Image (cartoon, rainbow, N blue to C red; front, side, top):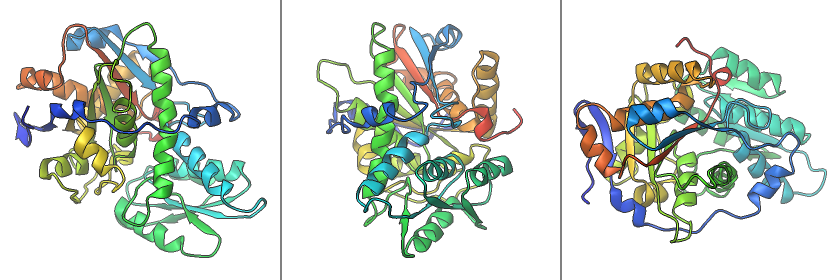
Length: 364
């Protein structure tokens, strides 16, 4: 099928169903064993919500609830812990390092927590737009915080410059040419989340659609890696990214068929307020991602309210998955978008709720 792109029926949308035929190598098999060895590790819940299945006219809808992951209110601890483990394993025992990063909130706190637990220090650069309680939570982990006047991309640039200091290591969940090894380890760390989903869906069937919030695209890269490296005997699900309409760098890049940066605005989905796709993620998204959609803050807020009423704590980024699937499967043009995603009455849908309400509080 030919890709469908652009703004249709008022919705920013991209689809390329041929992506389901693309394949790649899997993530390392030892990542989940590493996470299982950490204090406090447990698989996060995969909760079935029949009311959403009825709303969308599909077989089942599940929400992967990342509101409590290794003691933190978001999934980011998976990538940070594995990456820091790999960084430290290449240094002499007892060597002290500064772990430097930029963050929209959750990643910085995960790096700061990992640094504290491993006996190291963290220096975290925070751009405009991050909730004060999220900044305070990073500080409570013992990190040095540097506030940046400007965008997330500017915070990344300043963090990278700071990491040139002796004994400093940049632990960033965004890659660019010349800086890809550590972001690659972060992406590998996220593979545990998808391995858990496989185990939790055992006996239910494979998902037909997986919705993933996308900032710079690293979690989406992990999703594509997982679902495009499975045995040919397992059906390949559609993978859908969801972004704020004010920061839809993945969607814009897919539409242009090359990485492009977008000027970001203000959004309650602070963790997704990113203007540039990770260079490491881009080839995976270009070739293996089925669809992308942009949503509004109002759509995310409505989704957060609905999930809260169903007993799930979701921040605006976590609720974006529901908002994106709702936008894709319903409304004007919904039939064409359902066809592009191969949605049917028995399809299993998985929504990744990447953060709890405590990660990024806002009024919904």
